[in-house]
Image 1 (cartoon, rainbow, N blue to C red):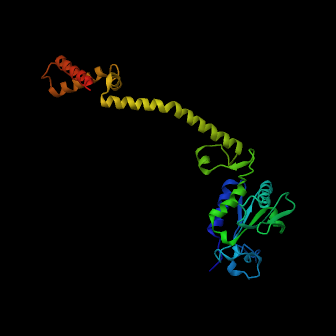
Image 2: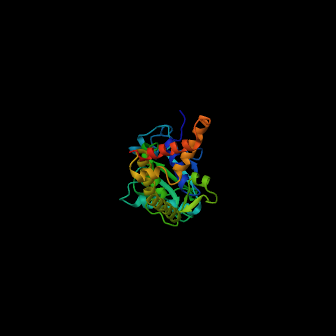
Image 3: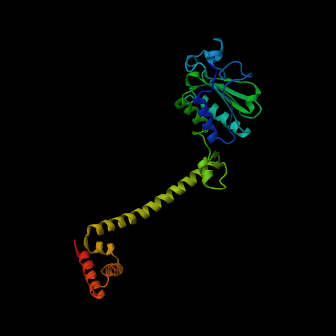
Length: 277
């Protein structure tokens, strides 16, 4: 069997790309530059490799790679690295409990990393100045439920600024021109609130009128009271209805009854129908 990228890590990469501007998948399964560690499957590594020693790393799919590299712009490299580092150092934040380590940069010059399993700083080569590496404990590499916790940290759900830019969905750009690929959190929240409030006002004003109209129709159908009758046939409508019926019957009778007498009979029938309960 060949090494493969688990669906969980591919899902995590796609979710990051959806919400982080400039995010690109850089790699999951190791190549010639990755001869050991989490980018390789446990099945091809010796028992001495550091990535197969912990209890969680002895579980999970044996042929799955368990690391994710994501490329970001310089500004987002710093922001994502800081989010990961702040969460890793926070003893009250358990969201990175499913990760073994990460590498990135806070200043674009020095690689910053943290071993989230043993709780200590680590570092790596300078390729991590342009991409963030995340090693996932192998037990959780295909577990979207647990990977969602890591996604939460990357998205900055606990420290997002109103000025931060977030990606807009494809649905929005397909329906409105000139929106752009990103929008500030402040604009998104304000716009969402504005439309929600407008919808609320429309519903508050419109629903009673709709219900009133529906009730009038029901009353007219059930023949309840004069108001219902007037709702069923407003002023002038009974005359139009009478004429229409008269003309139709006159055509059918082909002159066998005087038109005025026929009209009077129809008016009488209509009036009688309107007075019935």
